[in-house]
Amino acid sequence: MTADSLGRLGTTQMEISSTKRLLSHCVIICLLLASCPALGAAPAAGVGSISGTVLELDGKPVPGALVAAVPGQMDHPTATTLSNADGTFRFEGLASGGYGLTATAPGKTAGYLGDLAVVQDKEMRGLQILLGGNGFTIHGTVRDDEGNPLGGAVVLAGRQSDVYGDVFQVNTDQQGIYSVKLPLAAYTVSALRPGYEVNSRLVSTSKDQTLDLQILSIAKATAPPPVEVVDWIRANAITITTPEAGHGFSDMEPLKKVVGDARIVALGEATHGTREFFQFKHRMLEFLVSKMGFTVFAIEANFPESLAVNDYVLNGKGDPAKALSGMYFWTWNTEEVLDMIHWIRKYNEDSAHLKKVKFYGFDMQFAQLAIPYVSNYLKRVDPDFARKAEAALRPLFRTLTYPKLSQERRKATAEAIADVLKRFDEKRKEYVTRSSEEAWAMARQHAVIIQQAEAFYGNGSSADNVRDYAMAQNIRWILDHEGPGTRMVAWAHNAHVSFSQNSLVPQPMGSWLKKEFGKDFLAVGFAFDQGSFQA
Image (cartoon, one colour):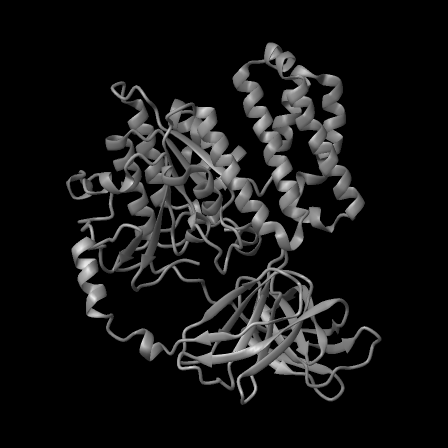
């Protein structure tokens, strides 16, 4: 999950739904879940309209441009139209909410217009989508699984950015050929057609290139699997009787061999909104702590904000529900995660458990708490430098608006953060004397989070690589901070725990951890069979 999730959806109240069928079997690495929670997006309250004109940079109208309306919460358009001879276009009956508009035309760099709010029973008029400027061309052929070209297929290029709705669409001709000129950025390019599965490819370099796409017919995709595959699964699957914690570990004993001596067990998830994923992760934590000596739980959430939860599970301080909601992401603000936090606290309260379980976040998308944390620490140990540092870090306090600052301002901020970290290292002995080794280490890590957030919001199309590398580094820091032999359970999306490039993340966190830790890093991917989920 990225900061986009917060901007698009906001933080929700804790929700839960009944399960249609309980998990009956799971296969380690791919957990086959029978159902998911029925928590879909609520329908819009009303509809509105949008109208405008597609123009070249010199103001000349562009007829025949394909204009797409993309809701802010979605990665595909919900409506498309062609511009008229005078370049005008109009959408009616759009569900109320935030939108982006994109337009594509042969030979012209595609255009984008965002931050649009559709209001019930009202029309937004006079909009202008400009085509032109620097770009690069992607072209190729969409074929079926037998190599036949597919006319009438849709090709979507979703830009990796900090804005919403920038998904550009073109259609294939009768020979299955498409071509689109895109603004310079990294993209996830997908081909889709009714009756076929979606196929996505990552384009990470802004150079003209050929990108052929093949999509598999759903009829073939849903055909019975080969007997050899079914037989292998039956011979190797580990049967799990329930996803819920608190039911003992007799069915999970075979997992000891799978985990082995791994120091990091990363639990993935195909969606951030599947109830059984969350339940079984709780049960996995219970098993790994109780039976295999794991003492750290870490989640894809912002590091500074997670410390409030850690204070609760270790010391019983604060309200765990408020601490959980204070981590920003609606995805973790659920009863399943809160139940797990309560379990950690109960485990830690038992005097028989000499080694306590700690709770950390390893994400770094926000600096709102990190900046005052560092500033307050510096006021204690280095007051004169604190005033300088506080002023220099201020632009990052609102991370979502940071990319809009001038390049010079962002460069100055990045240099100031580097100076802060340099000061921490140069003055380490002095700072530790005035505080403690623990206080110095925690304050410095907060400064690292600030530096990572700056790199994330200041690098545009490379942001995803920055984030996953940073999360891997934060996991490394947590292990080092907790000492030799520490074993960690890490919770994140499948795309982050993966070893290899995927449609969501160019170089995922898992690839960095696998490179550094080798067999001491185990990734467990979670998948589901059928049902619904919150997205």
